[in-house]
Image (tube, rainbow, N blue to C red; front, top):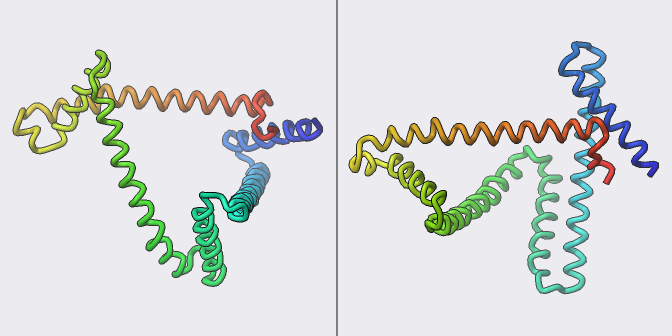
Length: 205
């Protein structure tokens, strides 16, 4: 209870100060807000460190109990230790060895994950293209028109397909995108206002 009584006024005060810095031009206020933002980045760094320690503890416990998935925990802990050791020895994340590790390990892993996503997207597309309602039929028609309008074969089939594809992007797709962005903006604004007035307290949970 005491923690919530302290955290709520502190969060509200800091949020209002940072918000006021966007509307009020004051050197002292800007310096105070810069210090608060820097402190938040330091706290976030410590939170990341705590998350790393918690991750290591979880997988070490799995290795000690000889769980069936312990082989994955061993690989993760070994990779974590090797990356930390290389970072400390080579002089930080911007060193040549760390960049080489990033280019030789992380980039290929990302490429492999994205290649798996391609198969998942194809599977989802196949399931979506099963026409079961009027909405699904319209989706399939628009998708086929866009796909054909993006390829040279579509121009050979019908020279108006590229113009129809452009209209789909410029009118219905753009309208839907703007609606989604407006919803996201209003939701973010409402969430921020709830935090500022103390109604929503995610930091106190």
